Length: 152
Image (cartoon, rainbow, N blue to C red):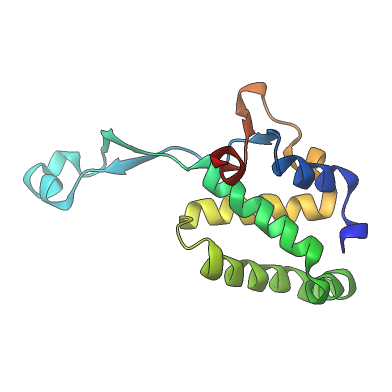
């Protein structure tokens, strides 16, 4: 499948091995609701959000998963055959591959990070990296680096 991937996807995969990659910030910030005990003692707070608690997606972890998906899709000949032949099977095959990869190597990726990473990887496989991240306001773009390379 590597020959079928768009050149900019292959370039992004190559850059991930040692250079920062222009990308989108995946996901969004989550605000937590108040604890159940707090809500029971403060019925008026039922629909409020606890602004002191903020959860954000780990961009390097999510992008590690994105590039693992892209790399696996580029290298997996069985997946490449199903991806290229049968339109009805291609997405389910991709999700099956993603599920196996997540179990084996990315168990710490949150469900939100996984969904965002899988969506971006799927889009990049179809339209290329540049088109997959195109069309957003400049403040949504970030540079991500492979944490495994940064650690060495």
